[in-house]
Length: 77
Image 1 (cartoon, one colour):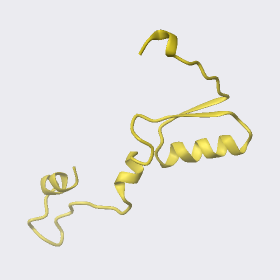
Image 2 (image 1 turned 135 degrees about the vertical axis):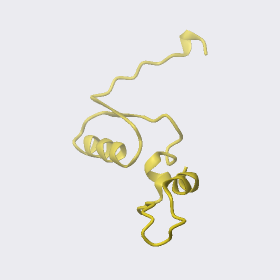
Image 3 (image 1 turned 120 degrees about the vertical axis):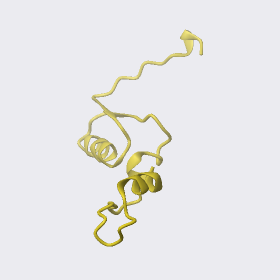
Image 4 (image 1 turned 90 degrees about the vertical axis):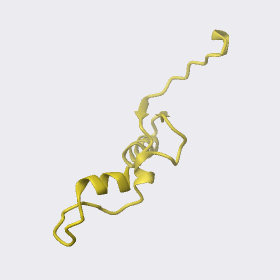
């Protein structure tokens, strides 16, 4: 990219992160009439909140003695 191609855009608010909290903050700021910029390190819709897919998972070992945090880590990461 040539330096002459860089644009400067000014906003009242900059929100960093496009997960659930970041998008909620950006929507609220925009609804209050503020010029709002959103910065995301990945494609929109691919933030960690979306990838979590809801739910809670844990390795407690209280139902199956083969349940272990290392297995849980391997399965979820």
